[in-house]
Amino acid sequence: MQTVQQQQNVENARILIDKINKNCFAKCVPKPGSILSSGETTCLTNCMQKYMNAWNIVSGAYIYRIKNDPSSN
Image (tube, rainbow, N blue to C red; front, side, top):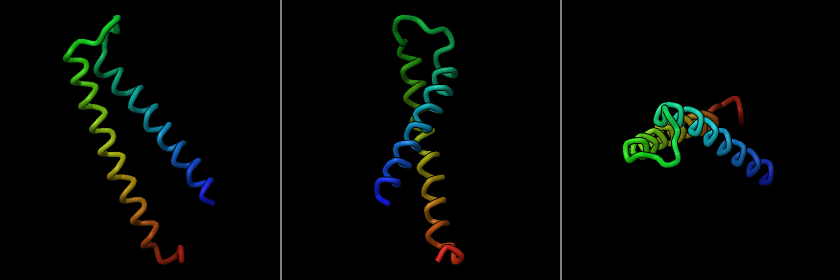
């Protein structure tokens, strides 16, 4: 059971990273070059932090709901 949970955690992390890469890069780096500007770096950092915070809030709410669902007991 623990292995299944670990695999699910890895898959969830992969999904999060894919979404961050796709959405933040598209938003913050409109014209890719050989290096990132300081503005692009700041934008990417802020975008990633927002995605991670949102992910943590949604995950926490989901876990709370599962633990407190009387039909799952």
